[in-house]
Length: 44
Image (cartoon, rainbow, N blue to C red; front, side, top):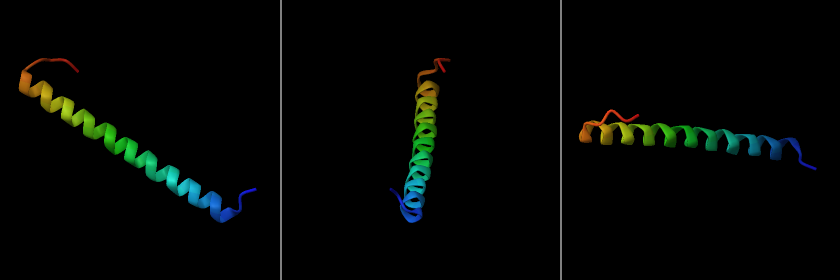
């Protein structure tokens, strides 16, 4: 059984990883946009 503190810590870790995943996805999108702009292709 988990106590409240352990559950809270788990939820905090999950929140942090969600933020990291979102930041990573937006970072990759920006990189792809720069590559597209450099090559001049209209590929999304």
